[in-house]
Length: 255
Image (cartoon, rainbow, N blue to C red):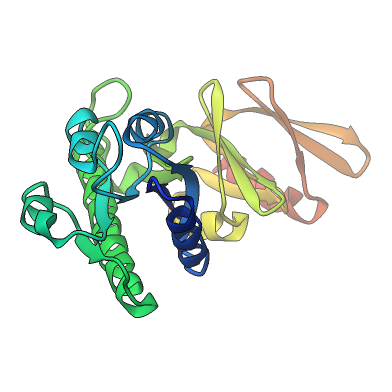
């Protein structure tokens, strides 16, 4: 996932130059460019960038006033200015770096690399914290057994579900849909990998190239033609059984 970056400088040539440098780094996504501090405050609040390349001296609202005006958690800041007298104050507000104009491409890349490292570290720490806080809690506040726990990354957030709550899993292009209760989670994963993850659990079986089913949600096995069978779930979902799997499915259901 790319790091959202905002450029703030009152000189258009400086904004354009920074945008060009950022475009050469595949990890950065420039989400906006601002020509003054007021715009910067509005855009930071609206766009939630993780990194801001911030000029110090601007008309009206300077760079330090921008930082003081935005809420926590604040983005990482790299100050970019032609004036060296603000360096100490910049690091007092926890700036990642302080670049003096004119600077080399190598010096810019060094500052960006440092910022990316810190942002990635913070993201991992946040992710670890979310997992740790949720390891012992399900939706109803009860502890989920570690063996029964499934950790999903969904739209940038962490979901921890109980495997026993899964009704069935469906292959969907390069994704899978995991159906739980009255909803599903779509994640980028293969059905084969999910089958391996659930392989030690006798309640789950891959009954078709596109489906894995939890036996506890199966209501009945029905013949839909002389050679075709479907599973009817307690939720009224109807799922096709592969012809090559039918005898195995019958044994699994009767076990």
